Image (spheres, rainbow, N blue to C red):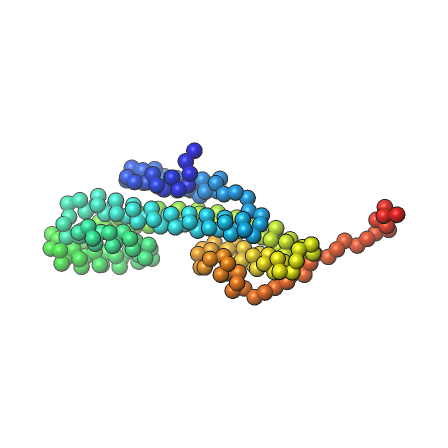
Length: 226
């Protein structure tokens, strides 16, 4: 069975890229199947490392795909040389909200490179960027949805540990911070990228959550004790 990383690694040709575009949610599904259960603080941290690595793998693959598309689109063009194509590919994510800026820069470079039709060259680069960024968005959307869902499902257990009278105060404080961080991630999955987990937890104010109330001893319980 293919792994999530292998799925991205196989996108080394435009035909393979098209296969990935047809079912981008498969990446998150594979990733979910690979993740072990996380019930301890150490396991939650290890799972987060795997999830952030999965997001980083998307970015690395998108650079490769953008370069493939540029080389195909500009096969007959000499005004945009290999070094510039590499720069455009490696910075593609920075144009996610403004592809027109990339087109403007491409047009200027094509003009200086004496392209017969700089506008056409810029349009080809813009089209390559838009399709590449659309795939990036689809892969990230499903992966971030998985991250948010995992965080949401872990909140109750973290809250239980934060209020567990059997645990020491120091451990309960860690679980309290972890629960609050999970709540943030559940609402904004991309916040997982804001800083490493340890740094995010350290930035939260210390808090010792009120333990769950102990069950009252009933008359029937006292009879059983006798």
